[in-house]
Image 1 (tube, rainbow over the protein chains, first blue to last red):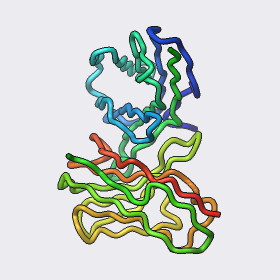
Image 2 (image 1 turned 90 degrees about the horizontal axis):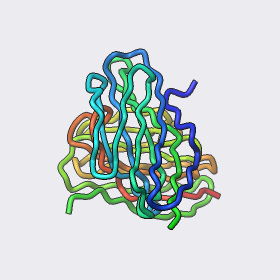
Image 3 (image 1 turned 120 degrees about the vertical axis):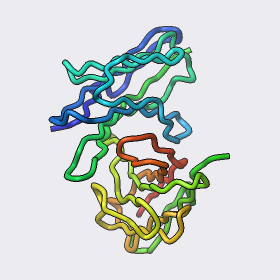
Image 4 (image 1 turned 135 degrees about the vertical axis):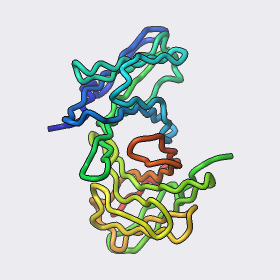
Amino acid sequence: AQKVTQAQTEISVVEKEDVTLDCVYETRDTTYYLFWYKQPPSGELVFLIRRNSFDEQNEISGRYSWNFQKSTSSFNFTITASQVVDSAVYFCALSEAYGSNYQLIWGAGTKLIIKP
Amino acid sequence: EAQVTQNPRYLITVTGKKLTVTCSQNMNHEYMSWYRQDPGLGLRQIYYSMNVEVTDKGDVPEGYKVSRKEKRNFPLILESPSPNQTSLYFCASSSVYPFTDTQYFGPGTRLTVL
């Protein structure tokens, strides 16, 4: 079973629309970390946010916001008033304990297309 | 400028011909990792290193080797590449434990093995 599910393979919206990218995770740990990374068409991976399991406070950064809900094991990402430059593949990732270490598990990614 | 560099960015090779992909970071980070990215699978970790001369296997280490002789460099070696190693490869570095904190990624190396 997938531990990080990004059910939306591809989303296409028109510029200025709001869009939400879903991320559902599965873990038995009480301490874990969640991440979002952005991969624009140029290919590099850019860190967006990190959240630990004890901090359920939602985060807003400009047009970006994240909704962390432990009750539904979700860490969704919303872009408000989308712009063409937001077009990218977005990855959600989960870090959970693995033996004495942690392992980082990535979702398959959601390709977001913003049309002008 | 703080960055992670990889070379080459694109490489086409043939089965069995040894190759090395270099990775270098200028941020004095202790941790470095190699990932491969395949469609529909996200990123999977190949190897990681917690410091000079300290390396450990990730999720998909078969067919790969790494070395960490200097803090800034972490080359990925494919001794005998096969077509199933055709992929997009990323090197990453971090100043803290990479599984629980931010990583900085290189630009990627697209490898095709014929």
